[in-house]
Image 1: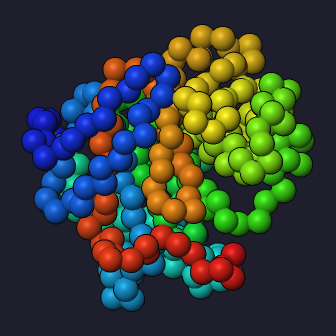
Image 2 (image 1 turned 135 degrees about the horizontal axis):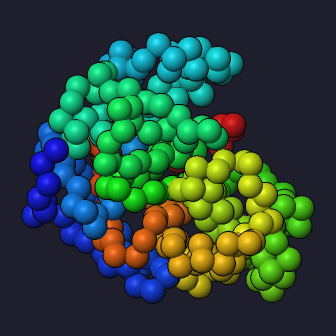
Length: 279
């Protein structure tokens, strides 16, 4: 894989334990991309492509991905899955310079995907309603999460049942009008951390704490029985668009971040907003 700095990339810089909230979503037009050793790339993609494009994505999928797609009861859920996996393959192919349909995936003990055979390119993905986020790095573990924030959720009940005492107390201090944002801050940061480690749902959400108060830096604050973990990982906020909240977790500190739009993005409208009655 070629390794050099892309001159069109504009990086933001990691400061202490927070990623600065400066976003320059660039639309990708080259057929290839490169990842420097200290680079982290975030991609944003619309999961409602035109029918002909969706068919092209479906043609890229492996047999097991086709089987997974067929298990969805609702067509729109199936189509989003197909788009998400097809786009993942397409983006990976620009880094690896391999046909997207030829890529093969294996899965960790708790379901985290990785390239097979193993590659220095690490990746993670998340999607919610019409939007997907993808994160890529080299030789460092990475996790990403995104949530559609307009969906109905019993925020306080979830926090009191699953979060730590520190997080519960923090949320109670937040004004009622801001509690929903605080909840999604905490939820996405916890998910990103678990996904970066590849733990999935096997680790209780109450076994570690993250910051969640709005406008405070994203940070991993405490990990049960593993205090060194707070120095191993850095959390950051991703703001992909109206009505969505995202979070990123990356191993190490010496990395730089850039933001990319997948080339299928629809311009002139907000393609990521889900219909009011969507589920």
